[in-house]
Structures are given as structure tokens and as C-alpha cells.
Length: 549
Image (cartoon, rainbow, N blue to C red; front, top):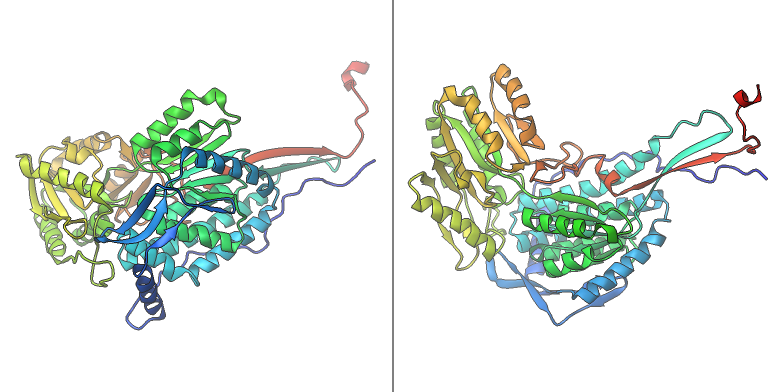
């Protein structure tokens, strides 16, 4: 008996996406009125955020609170840490849910994702931004480009990238054979561990594996809890079944130890610190023979990003780009400029420009539309950044020419700080500070080649970097000489601001596994491809023609 093709890979027709427009929030605009209402509602209560495993909402005795970083006396969310036993329950739930979810056609999953993006763009845009502003101390533009635009872009573009996988079809050399390549989820579960600094990253880390047919345990950052829970609820409303993604706040070691101890671990999607990712990688390596799959590990771990300025650079571009890169969101973007190399010939003008703008920056409450930035995320961050500033104050190798003040009496405020350092190998130039601290090294113009050599090797990171130059010959040389220093490289532009679908993001060396979130290859990291050959004629021969001579 013969029958037709059993396996096909379908796609959603005419699916074309674009980047979500950034709204302006001008006085009197609808988006500003909606946001102000959402800010008032969010600030007026302490929202109860449960652990969610499958259909079940769970509250443990280990109660925690998320506070506003710019006013840490105010709580905005009450949440609960999952115990190791609850994490195991979530593993069982996700692993079981994956079996059914993977059988849902990709076209249906994509439709859910597109519905979710529409909900984020309209019905829940103000709520996403309000919870991000108040919970993570982002001023309005930084919330808008993150918890609205980038999040929506991740949802839509990853759906587009998954849909485009159907464009490739293996060769079938005759009508007697049909070859198909289809994309399955990975049997087991994915552990998603997300950071505080981008709401969008939380959504991407948890829901891109889910899009590709996986079950997920999502451990959100304690300091991004409320915005991340908002994403979780939106995705459920859009149609993601219970159990596919499980919302599991937990102590980091409890979560890491439990997921890496499960034979069903299929992957870890991580953004955070190098020591934590190293710990997870080490645990996986030590238990490798216990897993059903080789777990897939994706990590984005930060950087020590640079601006290299050539003597031919446009000073205005250097000053504007460096201020924005170093001090927007108080230097807490993974891509923020933390070190700048300035030629001696340009330094007087660059210094004047940096200090003039720095002194005009308003650092305050996120609800003040005049604020350029606000507080750093929490007490631990405040103390870490304060430690580097105090180190610079006590060292003869450093001169603080702007800022240097800090105050945590009400919020965790650190003033944008500019430090000139005369040692290009000093720890303040090598180590990630993750705060509003810019270190400047002034070099003799003739020493540009040695500066390139030093900046290329002084840190273990390779996330973002930028070159400012109007000399085309130098710029061409720098692009090649600095090729391995950054996964995202900029020419006459700041080191921050990557956009989904435009500049896929990620770095190498100790910055991460460089899997380029926001690009077409990222979805494949969470797919489990299967090649299927179907033959339509009987197999009758065991011998080959040459055997019959």
C-alpha cells in the first residue's frame, strides 16, 4: 500500500515584521497619559506575585519584596522563593508539557507569538513600561526602548525567523523520494535565568526556547520580578499553554543546583555574571554522563566596552556618544562604554565637552521627565560601584574630573563619574564596574598602535566596542585589528543601542557564547532538527548492478 507524504513543514504566509516604533511621550500625548495612569496604579500597591507551575499558583513561607531602586522605602511587589522540591515539580511539569507543546504546529505557535506582540504594543504597553520604570529605575525612554520596543521586536522577529526556517527544503532528486527537514523541540526542559537590566531579555530568554517547542523553567531576576511577571501573564493570555513556561523565582544556587541535577536538563539560557555562568557550566560538565541530551548552554556575561578615539575623530560625536553610552541607565547596560581611549591632541576639547554635558545631566526620580537617568539597581550594586570610586579617590594613578558622589539614603544614587587613569592596565580599566563610571586613558597620538594592542588584551571580555575616526585608512585598519575585541562593533557610533533584526547582539571571550540574540540563527540553538526521508516505491533489490556481471 502506498500513501502520500507524511511529513510537511508549513509556514504562515505573508509574515513580514518590522521594528516597533519608539513612542515620543510628549506632553498631552495618549501614550504619556496612559503611562502616567499605569505609573500611579503600579506605585499605589504591592502586587502579589506567586510562583506559577503549570496551572498552580504557589506561595511559600520565604517571602521577598521588590523595592523601587530610586526610593527603596517603597515596595512594589511581594514574591516567594521556590524550594528545591518546587523546582523539581516545575521540571516535571515542563518536561511533560513539552511533549504536547512540541506537537502544536509551528504556524499555531507563531500566531500566539504575534498575538502576544500585539498585546504588548497596545493593551499592556503602559503597564510593561511602568513596572520596568518603577521596579528597575529606568527613565521613560529607557523603558520604552526596552520593555516595549525591544521586547515586542524579540517576539515578532523570532516568530519571523522561525517561520523562515520552512524556506529551506532538502533536495529530493526524484519523485520516488521526499526529503524533509523539520524542527522539533528538545525533549526535557530549558532553564532560563534572566537579568535585571533589560525586561526584554527576560522575555527572550524564556520564550524563544518555548517558541521552538521546548518546556521552560524561568527564573527571573529578583530586581526585575514585576515586569517579568507581566510578560508571563501576557504570554498566557495570548495562548501559551500552562506548564510550557513556568515562573520560578528562587535563590540562585537552589535553582542552579536543582536544574543541573536533573537528567532532563536540555539547555540553559543565561544572562548574568561570569562566575555564575562558570558555576553552571562546571556543574553541567561534572554531570554530563547523567543527562539524556548534551545540554545546550547559552550565556551572555557582560563586558568592559570601549570607545577608541582617533585624532581625526569628530569631537561632537565622541562627546555625545560617550556620554550616552556610559551614563544612560546609569551604565547598567551590558554594552555600556566603561573605558575611553582619547588622543592627547583632542583631549582638551573632549574633556570640555564631557564635563559640560555631565554637569547638566539630571539624576533623579524616574517619573520626572527631565531625568536623564536614575538610581542603580540595588544595595549590592551601589556598594560595588562605590568601591571602585573610593579606590580611584585613594590612588595617585587616578583623577576624578567629574562626579564621584554617591548617596543611598533614599535611593541608590551614584553620580555619573569620569576618571582619568594614567595606567592602561589598572584594574579600573580591566574590570567590569557595571555602573555610571567612565575611565579615560589619554594617549600620545603617535602611540595609537600600542594602544590598540593594549586595549585588545587588557580585559577578558569582548562584547562591544566603538571606533571614532574620520580617517578612512585608519578606520579600515582598526576594523581588522580590533576584530576579536567585540561581538558588536561600531564605527562612529556609540557602543550601545543594538536593535533586534538590525544588530544581532552577543560577545565572545568571557562576554559569552555569542549566539546573537535578535538574529536569525538564535532560534536554531533551541531547535532539534530532524531529517526525514520517505520512499514511495517498493525496495526490491539487495544487490548492486556491478554484482550481476
